[in-house]
Length: 222
Image (cartoon, rainbow, N blue to C red; front, side, top):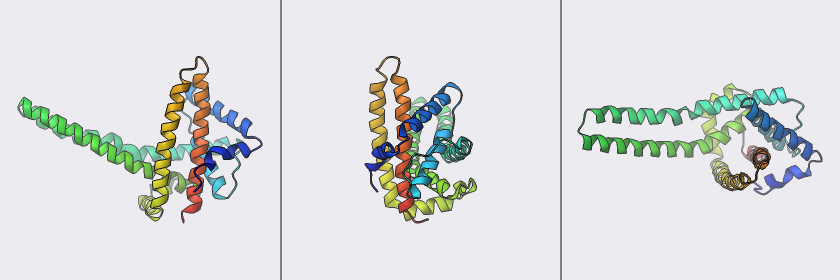
């Protein structure tokens, strides 16, 4: 995979500026009105383009389909994220219950043990999800099927077949996230327009991730 190309390809599209401005407006609408899954759907459209060898930014003439695609990906991501929310309760509740019946010293020790186990479990799940998230995006981009997102065996089989690719995607996402986090911190210091520039950065990240996912989809056997 070409890890530099996702940062530069969009400027080769003659309509990149107008398409990007619409993307920023969509992101703005998501803040002012309600969270919109359209940008996630736009990323799916870009993945499909890159899979076919077409590196132009998708046009915005099918926003309805982008909304549907983005919502499907959002719902699947939420379902796969449920362990992230349930693990703390599963681990902490027995510790709290046992601590209520034990002396103070034992209760404190159980509480600390519960917190440590919760942290380790969440850390493990976060690491797992760095693989699952891209696999869901690739699966949906290829199939367009909401049901395919919940065929867990097939999603895991895709990860196993292309483990090296998904490891590269994980590292790539961490590095991009770190760089963008620093950049947004700098932009937040700019009065009045810093938040608007951050929206532009957010759309740019969507494009970068969509391109690298498209490369991964092209590289991994279906």
